Amino acid sequence: MSYEKETRRRRTFAIISHPDAGKTTLTEKLLLFSGAIQIAGAVKGRKASRHATSDWMEIEKQRGISVASSVMQMSYRDHVINLLDTPGHKDFSEDTYRVLTAVDSALMVIDAANGVESQTRRLIEVCRQRDTPIITFVNKMDREVRDPLDILDEVERELGMPCCPVTWPVGQGKRFGGIINLRTQSMTVFAPGSEKRPQDFEVIPLAEADKLRARFGQTFDDALEAMELAQGASAEWDHAAFLAGKLTPVFFGSGVNNFGVMEVLDAVVDMSPPPGPRVSRLVGKSGQVTETVVRPEDPHFSGVVFKVQANMDANHRDRIAFVRVASGRYTPGMKLKVQRTGKELRPTSVVTFMSQRREAVEEAYAGDVIGFTTHGGVQLGDTVTDGVNLQFTGLPFFAPEMFCTVVLKNPLRTKQLQQGLQQLGEEGAIQVFKPEAGGNMLLGAVGQLQFEVVQHRLRTEYDAEVRLEPSQFTSARWISAESPEELKKFEAAYPMRMARDAANALAYMCTSPYDVRLAQERFPKITFHPLREHA
Ligand code: G4P
Image 1 (cartoon, rainbow, N blue to C red):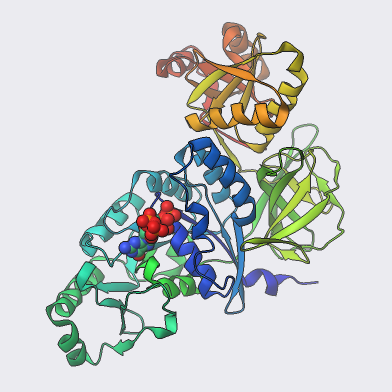
Image 2: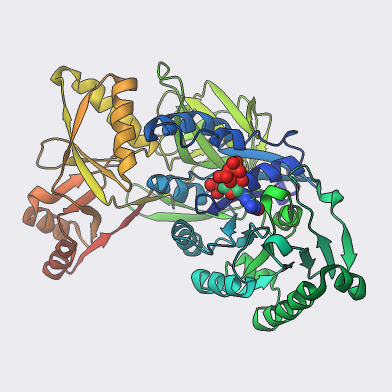
């Protein structure tokens, strides 16, 4: 059976932005215009009280809500669009990076007043590493913002790739007249109001320049002049370059006013790629590697767990493993195998995510995301198949930038602590390192809030009260060597610095940035990895 038709009409993407740039607003509008939700406010509501509660309470709440809304599926113009949400808080950036491994393109939202901000910059880096195509949306043109030429220049510099404007703004703030669509050579006139529908906006062909001039005066002429400048200075549209992550189309608009949003939704359909092939790397018993290119339309079902999330109800230990389908078709009742363990996966339920609801999945193809409810046996990065032997790699774990030592208050709760740490480690909520020399477990995080969440969850979900004490370690590097002998020598030289993570990978713990350099000088044949890819 050929699944080509189904996979070709799929688009799977994530929105990346700095907090407050307008990601939530835009997400909601995309859902609204595709018909996935009926009323505005449904998505936004979840952020309503974001400043009213303490940080971890908020995280708890978001954790619950995001189970329902972290993947949103909609259909638009006979396409199936999967929008994957990324956590907003920078302390959870690791989660975001992993979500980015599950998408085929990204939509970058920037606040026209602030340009490219710090968190967006980090996300761009990840996209660039993977050559993920990026569509750029410059939001909040209804405000007093920066000169669009300036913004283009900054996006080019930050992204390290040329921009190609697809729409161009006429004025801004109080004088925001609308956007010129360079392709259709027409201007869509701006009108404020969040109840506006795309068809409500007036469109005037550029050929009627006199009419536009009469209406928008000098603002129109200035926009034309700037647009010509921009077109002269920027790249011609080149679809192949966009797909290769070497050029970004740029759109302007105002999300809150529903303006310029439809153009972006159309771009996702028309420009973004459908799911592509992935490489499976199977390592045999004697170490030989078999590489296979897995195409989305291949008949065997396969997918990767890119996110594991505990259910909101702390009394139930079940978790949802989010699987991005890489090939084939999932149908209910299908037997599934976890490649890492060779074991059969017996999910209690398998769901798909329709904007705000979870529904029993009927079928899923490459590009789709399905959620398995499980009681264990699945880890982040696991490859799940219908039985065929495949192993995808590439789910990144970043070297933690801060460490704590875990001290259990009641020693009788050791078993609970171990179980808790293992499960939280499997979820990717924290990284757990076990010192080779023995002693207390080490927790590694990228953001401070991760520690607070883990401490809180150990108490509420595992009944294990812990104290987190500062650790002398400030960083870690996973290590590998050209030969086992070389690795042994290294381990013998630094016995107190060796630790193993949840996947049993060996790491060298550092106390200062110079450690790695010194160790490298002493052991030139050892490789220090700041990032571990799940194998
Ligand atoms: P985020 O998810 O990226 O954090 O951003 P979010 O959509 O929550 O938007 C952040 C703020 O920016 C919100 O205002 C939102 O209304 C506003 N906003 C989004 N798009 C536009 C736009 O095109 N123009 C203008 N002027 N504002 C925009 P808030 O005051 O924080 O929340 P609210 O009270 O408006 O809900």
